[in-house]
Image 1 (cartoon, rainbow, N blue to C red):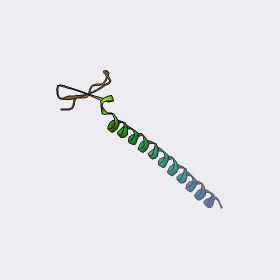
Image 2 (cartoon, rainbow, N blue to C red):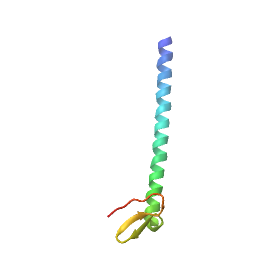
Image 3 (tube, helix red, strand yellow):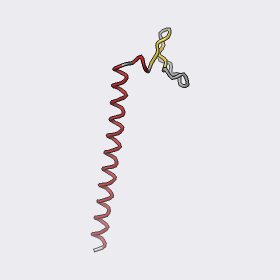
Image 4 (cartoon, rainbow, N blue to C red):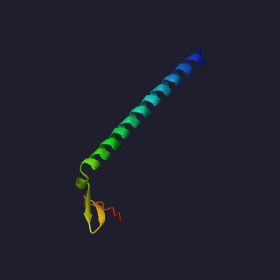
Length: 66
């Protein structure tokens, strides 16, 4: 009887972990899609071009791409 209860509690834990994993994946996927959409819609809000180099608009973080 105890073994059956342990198996049921283990399967419940696995289901909960699976639901948490799926929800976190969906949240990350939605965030990535919105960032890509914003970058495609108005790229000048995020990057600046100076002398052929791309800069992030935020002055505290500078990333150089050439």
